[in-house]
Length: 194
Image 1 (cartoon, rainbow, N blue to C red):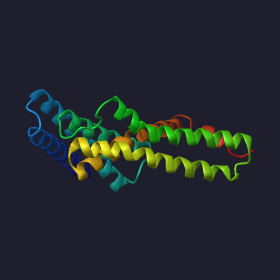
Image 2 (image 1 turned 90 degrees about the horizontal axis):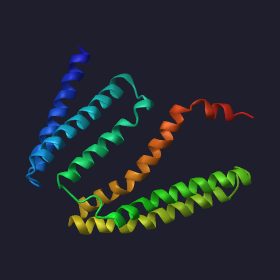
Image 3 (image 1 turned 135 degrees about the horizontal axis):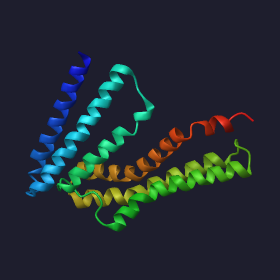
Image 4 (image 1 turned 45 degrees about the vertical axis):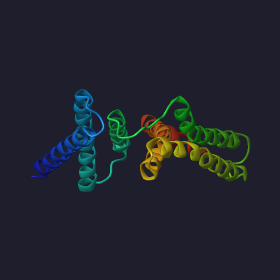
């Protein structure tokens, strides 16, 4: 019985996502191919999100499937961008500016690893590195969000799109770390006690 309920729930959510993407997308574009593929991709993404949310609520959270929600949200963002709901990256410069905070975070991580190799792990340099990186990342995030607000002509939509386009590179970094931990789980256990 729970299998039938979950199947109906996933199919209903997928159908709703497909219809919503088709109907709302029809306001922004008349290209039937973009509308059709957008509806199919949205239906699959919303159905996948619903399936994993249902499984996590009924059977418990499984960290191995934590990559599904960011991927489904990215698919939905790509569909909305392709259908013209909003402008995501205005140009290459905007994309590069949006990646700058993620580059700062990666540089801070590399700096912490180097500092950990050179000095003691409890050194005062680690909080200084992360505080400086967080401040610089916040400063670098202002310009892409302002550009997003200006190009989408809405403070609410522009702010949400600006935050999402800043999170796309960070999500890629997070997924890389999660996949690395899943592929090589014995590495941390082997290097732990010494």
